[in-house]
Image (cartoon, rainbow, N blue to C red; front, top):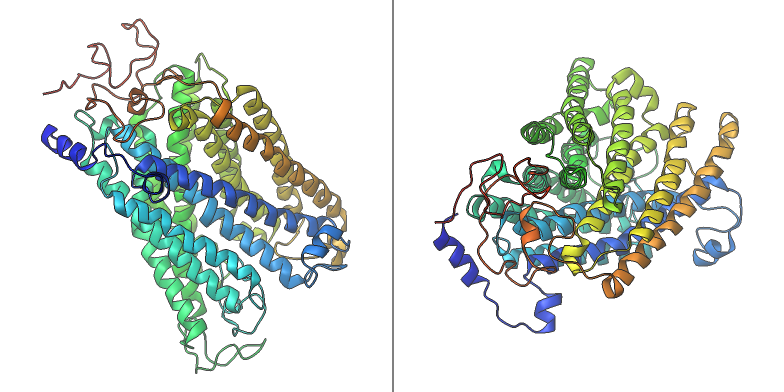
Length: 597
């Protein structure tokens, strides 16, 4: 990026004094917007967790009267929870956690906060569009919350909303007006994500500082860049599918409704002629890449954290970049493995099976490179590092269980069992949440100018690690035992009786896991006020954001940053310190320095 262009950017984002509303509410500053996404995600994490606990309590004690819950939901939870209410709980739990917690946290919060700082830009390319990307989430939040209070209840067709279950008439429970609001809410989420992806791509391509070549970008930026491309390519397909199902629900079109009626009632008045499987193809064409939208940013951030606390260069920088590109590319051609039970031609299914198995290769490259970085390193076991290492281990467990589902004959047996629930929670919840916690503990000093408590952080990590594994690992066992997903009362089936003790154990651990997160909340908010003040670079890290004050001012940098080398110059033999920042003009390093001009 030329100096003249940089100066234009600086003039465009001048240091004008703004009022409270413009500075903190309707802000155009990428850092404030990132923090807004962070706080919003925290609110919805507890909502999604509460819904999950409702599911677990029902599975552990399906015939018990829980006074608190039966008073809160008198029509749905008396002496026994209504099955329709149970389907609403797990449907909305998955929706909230995926679309309102994991994706907004990883791409909205950290993408917004880190990208300009890490590439040396003063702000995003389109600050107003960036502001709108956050405020388009609020109609989605409000509409989703409103769906809990309409007649028939919130959406209960699963987070995948397959027709025909999702296409029953508007008066039906679980797929009536609540389903319409679900579709509308996700449309707003999609528009918000699309705005963000356009901004990220443009910013990374056009606003990099002098010397910041693509091969000098930290892996956090590479991961956000690839994720933004994934979103830009996959989101339009989901958006179209949502609009088509919304039309089926409201004006009796028949895009997903077959002719001949349905065995459970008159769900539409039109002649039919549509194709229910079309929804599955459209939905999974987005939603399988969405798995990587939820994991790639965490992979990038964890890579930066591991290199920092191993005090050595990241092993295999370019293979790490190529593996992320490979994961993203293969992610677009494996959606059919979600549909092995749909009557797919075995020849087509074999193609999806082989492509799914192939995606394990770039994932293995990343895993071995993380291990290579830690090998022989002088590891600093900070809270951020512990969470980053937990991310790697949880990702490995989730990835290994995923190989079973990639094989069509095995998936036919496993697909509707709790083995799938275990897999998705290890890949998405366990991996992503540990990656998010690692990022929060690592970049909290840069965001707020204070350090979080390491003692409370390590207590939170240990308890979260233990209770999360005790909650989700037994799901593999009951899944192999045949425990089905989506059944409200497993005690109705004799063959599930030996597994009921594990259901109780998992529920107790899930409750303890939820309570453990209060330690994180206390640490987070107390540190905002009373945390130890942080200097510019408390971790002695190399990437460009650590050259800015903590927290960074409007415009980020006091002077135009210049980049002289890659982001992982740790332990260089010709330098006195064990780190060599990108912004340090020293002539030693593993790359030829690029000087300002």
